[in-house]
Image (cartoon, rainbow, N blue to C red; front, side, top):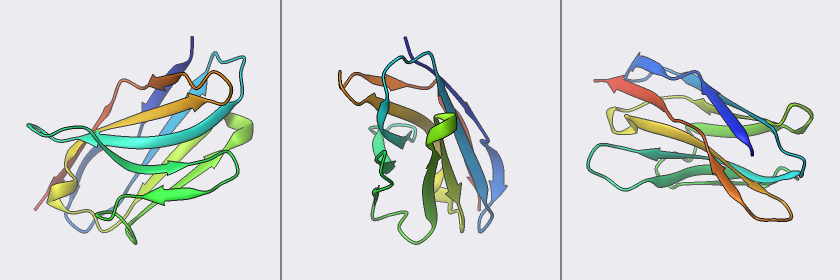
Length: 117
């Protein structure tokens, strides 16, 4: 069973920055894609950014140029640097990993990000 522990959420003013971290543990299999998703009140969960084990990244159009995803494979940790935050970025942010061979997907417990305008 893979355990994901997220940290770094909080309250920030519009234009500010936050950095989210997510550490994965408990996996005997290598981790493939790692990513961040978010869910705002009354909305569906959406993908924010993903990164493969080789470092290939993908971003939602709404965060391109403002957010940067990165990972440390040695620590099984993924990060999300969020700059120029907007009120519409307010949501619960979830970390997710997909194991390379089984393709099983695991989710973190979520961390709240609130951007005040």
